[in-house]
Length: 226
Image (cartoon, rainbow, N blue to C red; front, side):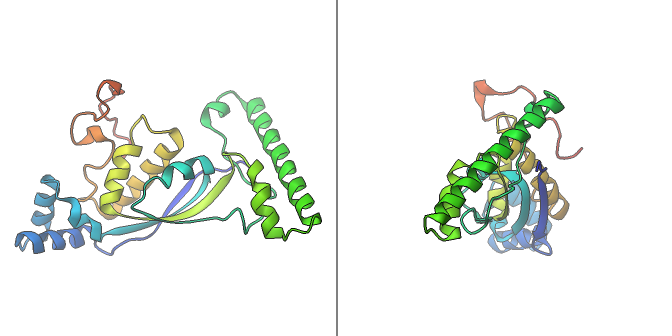
């Protein structure tokens, strides 16, 4: 079945801006936590934001996205297993550019996913008949599954890593699916920690475009603030 991404912030500090500001006040001796945080952020002293961690539940995203997301190593991930869970009837993600071709194209894509699902079931059955345990059959049958296969996961990052993640993945150069995920996560973070994430977003938010000659020349359209 075709699915759409869903992002839910399920855990965060009660007062993330205060927490990072308190850390900054310890370092600077400035008793005003708000001012201490402001000075730390302005000076790019971002280690104080590492004390604030955010956990997101993400569903309806592709395994292609997962491969990109897990490149961000200062994070914790728990991902739906294709070994221990049967993927018979797996959900899938259809790229927007394919959807733009119309319903006929979407239906064709869905039929291809159904064909792959059939292949998966056939291999799993053959392996079981050959004496493999079902979970062991799953781990080999899954090799025919596509990047479009949907998954769900839990991801935890501290605020400093999130700032870096948004800088890279909110950019127009990022692949469309992880870019959509990044903007959705950023909007949740800005609700909870408006000071820390005030200037969060693609690299051009707080300075010149880091892409240099590869710049999209958009000068940051404000997707985060509406």
